[in-house]
Image 1 (cartoon, one colour):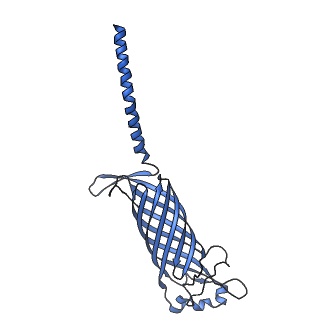
Image 2: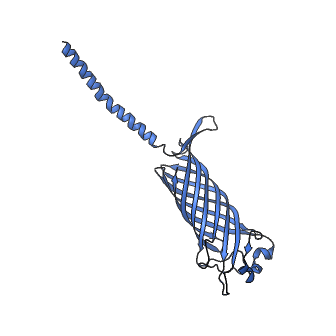
Image 3: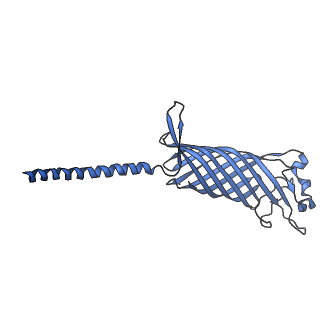
Length: 262
C-alpha cells in the first residue's frame, strides 16, 4: 500500500514539474523581451503637468559624416564631427511614438571649395582657388536645440539654433609669390530637420538639412594677408566700401552621418 501511495505522490510531483517548467520559461522569455527594449542610456525621472511620473532615457552620441554646403556664391565639401545628448521618453506619447529632445552639436571641417565658387566678400565676386592652398579652407560650429519623435527605430526631428563659420578664401593670381588669402567669418540663426534609423539603439544612420541666413561682419573679423593687400583686394572689400556688415547671405547644408549611441 505504501508503495502505491509513494508512487502516486511521485507521479504528482512529476506532473507538477512538467507543467511548471514551460511557465517559467515563458515568463523568463517575456521578461527578456521587455528588458531588451532598454538598451544603452541612463534613466531619469520627471513629472508631467498633471503630476504623474514620467521616465526618460538619457542618451549620448558621437558622430562622423560629410556635408555639401551652399554659402552665398560659394559651395563647399566638408567632413563633419558631432556630439549629441538628448532625452527620450520611455512611455509612448503620441501614436506609439517616443518623444525626444536635446541638442546636436556639429563641427564641419571644410576641405575645399567646389567648381564655380565665388567670393561673397569682394565686389568683384572673384572665383576662389580650388587646389593651390595649404590645409583646410574653413571650419565651423553649429549649436541647435532639437525636438523629435521616434517609432521602432525610425525617427524624424526639427531643430533651430545658431552657427559660426570661420573661412579662409584663397584667390588665384598670376603674380609671383603666395596666392592672396582672406580670413573671414559668418554667423547667424539656423533651422532645419532630419530623419534616420537607429539600429538596435547602438548605431544611428541619419540625414540632416540645415538652412539659414548668415551675416559677414567685416573688420575686425575679416583679415587680408600681405599678398591680398599687395593685389589691392582690400580695396574691393564690400564691408570696407559700405561700412556695414553683409546681411542675408543664404546658407544651406545637406549632410549624412553615422553615429554610435552610448
